[in-house]
Image 1 (spheres, rainbow, N blue to C red):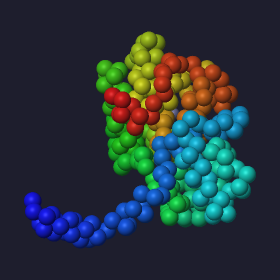
Image 2 (cartoon, rainbow, N blue to C red):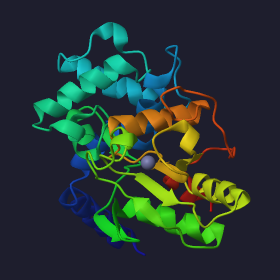
Image 3 (cartoon, rainbow, N blue to C red):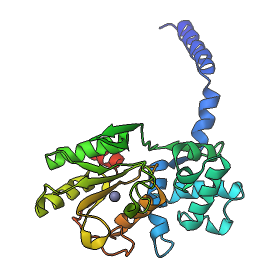
Length: 278
Ligand SMILES: [Zn+2]
């Protein structure tokens, strides 16, 4: 290439860069990133902690969210600490109500719309978690994220499950205490399974990203079944995200907060984490 032509080429690139809007892209890059997966994990676990410990990997993202809530006048500065505890949950719920959300949509668990809106001019949202669309699978309502997880758990287990209660079922079963009101919740039949198969089914569900327990008649007003909550589902009800937090912390997800009765799966992965390593 002659010197003259190369000068022309450089000039053309300069024109293209301006047309492509480089200054806009540069300012977007300058904003810090909030990791939605990490925020959801902290919002499930931190309110269930006895102390104000921070969920590993979530501190920077939670701080950005808390700073934004403080800027809106919804969270006292003393609670901007990287711990997504009950004060932060309450402040986030107040922010959701300010956007017009009610009921389960203002539970304090961040969804992508409120998280992006809160972060306008402050942060970008990465590792976005979506519940997907509402679908019917095995005759019950659930979201497409939960269905994909269930399909993978069935593949691991080697057989299809019978679903006795799905998600988005407000007030459907009083014994469920609201855990099935939102997304990510399933009850599965174990009547055709041996004790070993029940354990294996719970393990397969846990491996695919559910908090899953074999429930017994001695524990509540129900028969034997598996109760499962999709970890990190942004549509979870308050009861469901509390159970998710309890699962991470080694509890059984019941009101008595007994020890997790297994089977233990380690590490405990969300569906998004599972997909990255499988
Ligand atoms: Zn249930």
